Length: 364
Image 1 (cartoon, rainbow, N blue to C red):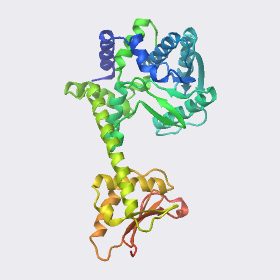
Image 2 (cartoon, rainbow, N blue to C red):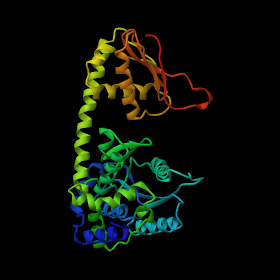
Image 3 (cartoon, one colour):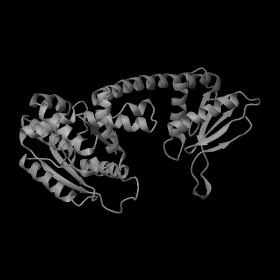
Image 4 (tube, rainbow, N blue to C red):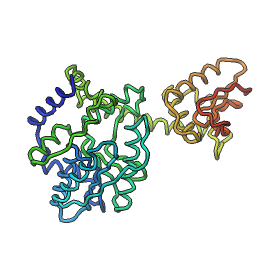
């Protein structure tokens, strides 16, 4: 289905969708009633404009509550962005909400623009929240965004944690990040604005198939026809998030179990596991413990799940040889078998700025 047809489908859905009521908004925002201030991320699109409208109406109904501040990030990537920020300011002023325009200054990358823009956006929003004394940044991610996130991560081979999608509350850049609309379809937010007779902007990059998310968005109608609609994809994400939380608790217990078995009780910048005890764990728990240890000890950024899985397979293969010899580095950490123990310690700095994985064989 082409972009124009997709827009027509969304418009038809918005005309039949139910607007978000004041009572529903009250329930969505209730947990943050005692916050000193909330910074709303408002781009001017339908989702975030609905967030601005609903949050302003919710706050007006309270005798006391948080100060609401709207912030628009002007990425300076499109000629229309400054005008859109001014329009958000106009709407916010009508609603009695303070507004800030945050500008992404400096050179822009030649590739990876969406990811770089996202990182810059969150950094700017977090800094603005701290300056305003806001305890959280609130975004307007919807059920549809959650479904698209699941598809994106599925296409990239994410594990259970990644396929769990976005969560309602998290932290980023040292500031709470809240997503009250994760269970609300986009068409309901559009219907809310239409009922309130509030205009909103349309970002053409949301339909630019040069980017991954718009390409996946165009697949949604066909997937929905087969039953894989946004609601079912979001439901899958919720179930995987629940499973991931349970597995993380099991990994916590397994880590405590291995530390009790470890006779040498390593400390400082070395993590050690009793190898026999490690072998008794399920493959999923071994992957998680190895991944945790590498991320804690390594100094070259987070390790990729696929590379941790490859490392574990190499470790298992090495255990079948005699004598057992294993030493491999990943993400700035060295994983080795030493006297019946699995150790993870910092790798020495690489020479000549080289990066990547390095495999070594050494005597146990």
